[in-house]
Length: 170
Image 1 (cartoon, helix red, strand yellow):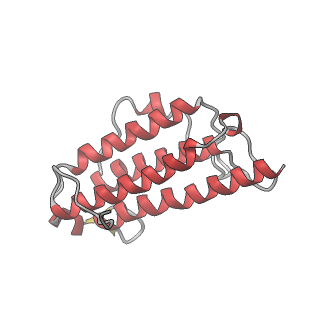
Image 2 (spheres, one colour; image 1 turned 120 degrees about the vertical axis):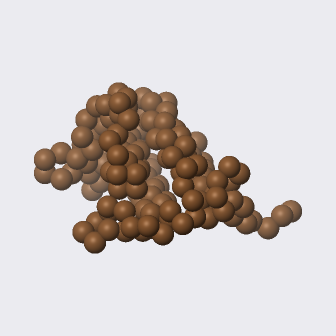
């Protein structure tokens, strides 16, 4: 059995390839957790939780798209974005907008955004990771943006687990 390493994904510069490997691992963990999901629970929120699993999946994909285009690339969103994201991720009061979609649609949306991210990362060099991009009041390094995307997804994976526990306890 081989020890686990973060072998850079092929087709990327060395450091970018390592980030791609980390992003891939983060997503694999989310998908593994979702594999055992009772899809009847997708749109339910247990007492004390303002969000459903489906809403969090929408949010994870929306934020990844936003950080990719608004912050990392500083470009307009792709033309078909509205097809995948028909509602704003947040309501006027700041809460996540409840999203009810079939499970397969949530997975396809996550795949669509991740495909865009990986395609755009192919054009980045290791030096590009050190540049400051528009992310936060003082800006952030492009490498920090990629780190943040993994952290954001992992935190919401934990929330999804808590929601599942809450729904199964009731």
